Image 1 (tube, rainbow, N blue to C red):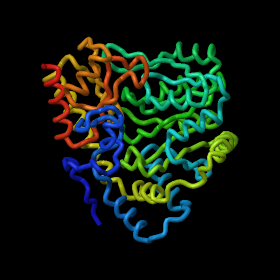
Image 2: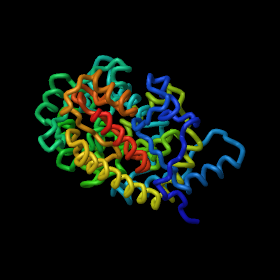
Image 3: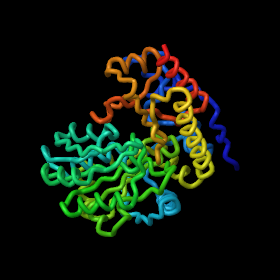
Image 4: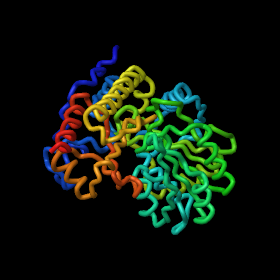
Amino acid sequence: MAERNLNFDTIVERRNTNSLKYDFAEKNGMPKDILPLWVADMDFCISSYIQDAIVSQAEHGIYGYSEPGEAYFEAVSSWMKNHHGWDVKQEWMVKTPGVVYALAMAVRAFTKEGEGVLIQQPVYYPFRGVVVDNKRKVVNSALVQGKDGRYQIDYEDFEKKVVEEQVKLFILCNPHNPVGRVWTREELERIGDICKKHHVMVVSDEIHCDFVWKGKHQVFAALKEEYQDMSMVCTAPSKTFNIAGLQASNIFIPDEGVRERFKAQMWPTGVHEINGVGLVACEAAYRYGEEWYQGVCEYIKGNLRYVQEFLQNNIPEIKMCMPEGTYLAWLDLRQLALSEEEMENLIVKKAGLWLDKGTMFGKAGQGFQRVNVACPRKTLETALIRLKEAIES
């Protein structure tokens, strides 16, 4: 059997499928016919191997409680070993219905109300949400953007905030969403050593780990043996294989004591088993999805180059630092010198685009827009032409 879904130029109609991305524009205050490039799911058909596995599961006709066996762990662990050089043990793995759920449980497990949780804005906005919603204190050690557009960690500020705010937990975004950094071993070890020194738990969101265009993804817990008793690594097939709606994530917690604290917080929520179809899809993805994955990576890299070249040739006042990872472009529109209201008018009303505005990721995101480029090239071309014409008008 061969992979069937390798034509990433195919435009698939997603409207009227209960798609969060396409079908809920009006409920979110957007025009009905807006072109969405916001939420991070892809507009590509998934691997045909995953489709076939789901169809086979559906044809069985009984959808009772599900729990994965050895084959599931073998598929997941082989992927981690082959792609990231990380040997994981089965007892480390805790399955959750999503990474954001796991982040929320970690906040509750490893901090008390009012205690500080450190994040690095501009960063994926649910990081702030799970802290605030659980009545903890957001401590921001903002990333610093260099003249070349590339973001760096302010280590002095990081340690100062950890000490002064008595931080108990650090949520790391690795690779970083939305700025596209793939943190190096040296960068991660430097912040890891600060966290170890001050007894800070590290929760590393590595959901974008399979999309690395420059450098190499470094699994935080694998960097040093002493990090294992202070870290939790969040992974999922959802971004890699476009199956976010199936709600299956694999969380790795090497230290038994830390793992039990996490599970003790999770169990009272009533989440004992996760989506049975998600388990089937995850196993099929990691076992048979390599050809599709390699294909989609090449296509996305082409899309990122296309965006960069289009901006340089047509809208030079908009800058994009080529992301080292993720399929998200972080566009700098500050040269347009627009207010938040004017920016919204330009993007939504004039260009007819639904993007993620930079301020969603923190104050440091003002003047930026995040664009999901995991779509057919024609869709991306249409969006960029709309943006160009809106600016020219």
